[in-house]
Length: 266
Image (cartoon, rainbow, N blue to C red):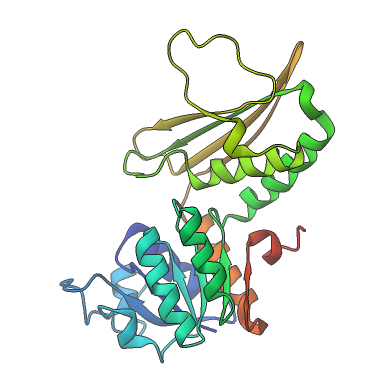
């Protein structure tokens, strides 16, 4: 599998290139930068600090569409949709790790998946996806007697809130409890709001420093509290998961999948 990495000069892009180099069965086919970047033409391996790879960085996906089999995209919602459209047109697989997509954009991915294979997940970490499985099990067993609160922390530069991972955790718990997250979610609390309702799912957000990503889900009732927590200390965990997803797509022609499919957790 030849992998293309978009945003190759960014923090995540560099990790994706390194993870590709360190993984078996895949190679770096293309590296894409912002149009007009001063690094266009530079060796992608040298940009990522992993040594010369013989892959020159380009300024658009259209310039390298024949050089890869699967695109890994951790950019922005609008750009990810545009890139997925190009990939669908050329029957190239896609791994989308971008967060903050709205319902309409998610529906567009579903449409593109009729023409190509896509893995879309708000968090590519193997550990986080195992955590999602544990959350579903916990919610099913504990039921409505336990209050649910989700606390997440990320670095100061993160632009969406709550994180896509926190929202996915909320969706998993709500589904296990037979609730609609759009109806029961409470995002932050301030002032004289009264006691919490029994079925609400609360979200608390922290943005500070260089926190890579911490997520903790509380199940609390009178007399006890259970916390299921995942902490990421390096973006490499997301990069390795994304490359694993790209490899998994090797024999897939069409369809929209997530990391639960990749890890056989369903």
